[in-house]
Length: 356
Image (cartoon, rainbow, N blue to C red; front, side):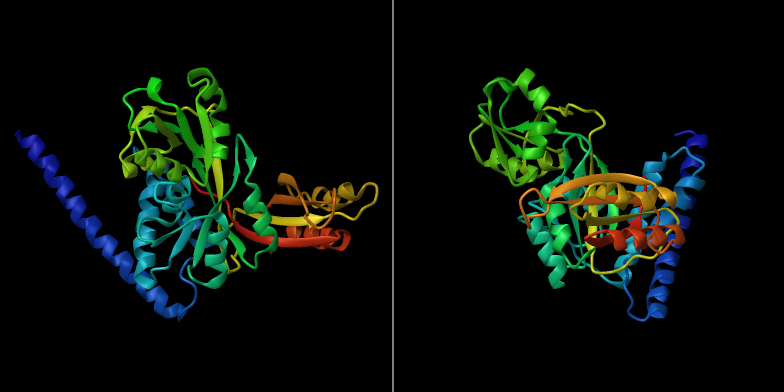
């Protein structure tokens, strides 16, 4: 070992010692903040988003922004746990993309509650069994997750945050090769996201939709080696499956957006979205009249999605995402006018835009 190498390692040790001191100093400050707040909510998505934005913006490298965001998410998670070990629910079993999104947003210290369905996630939040839930809301390839949209329409909960997760699908099995596969399990959306690849590489193989990708991996792990699953790498590791083909999604930029749901209102962070759902009155030009205040107040609309209202034949509600917080003057003014014109309007929540 050269003197140069010894010197570099000594410098790394010194940095590690300083990091340890600073981590504990931050944790003590977090404890003090908790005492000052006097039992107020521990999870403050607007504050956490501000911290992550500042750290990624000020990052001089060589670490990429996504790595910096991950590191500080884990620091925040550990410090948050000093105040309260809040539980977070998501679609299970272990190894789902929902669990991956939960970890990306809340870090490794938040206790995870695996639910059998999206409905169960909502119920756990509404009953206070957990502090928050993470649910898929839309995919860049396949569009909205209908069940989540329907439940957002009726839940007393609020959207507190959003998570954008790049989704890479993999063919998992105990089989030694693709030629042995006779059936493939996966969530219906994942099967659709991989339709082109499956048609080209696995023609004639039965496709069986199940409740989640992790459930698909669990089944493939329990059945003979002629079964396979489409799921993420975490599911392969958790259920002891081999990856026969990786990144088989038809769109390499395939991304799923998740919503964090809770029972709290979120303050402005400086870069926010507001989601709401509305119904138009049954008259000509009604949709134009509802959207006109957004344009006049220069509020940017980032999403407009229609869903059957389930209250009558051929009646629809419209889910809308706009830039800005409902407490912002222009957004508040625009929403007030929309409310006057709409047959129905419900604010689903204002929350920070996803970071990294």
